[in-house]
Image 1: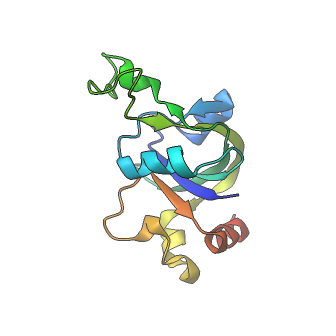
Image 2: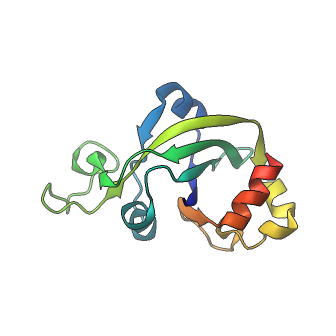
Length: 150
């Protein structure tokens, strides 16, 4: 089983939204490496750290799990959607996504500042300079440390 950190702006979709919906497609990702993670590496049952970004207190707010294999991101076909991709066709879709299912909300978010202060997490991809990926893998060691901090 793999673990992933998946970022979402809470004004777009938050852990509370996922708790309400129980399951949702992780649509709108328009980065090839993140798409490839979903398409090639994510498996049903993988753990997900649900991270709120671009907000007053960024950090891990909940836990989810991957609930489907990769499938076409339907937003790429919707002309009026901000994620529309004119180069995509039903026969040759450029963008893939997975579904994620709600597991739990943390009692207190594990803030970015707290993650930064944790000695053994300094190599996490989210902390690397210039990292803008919305999806990053989390090692077993990192997961263990984060799990103990929750």
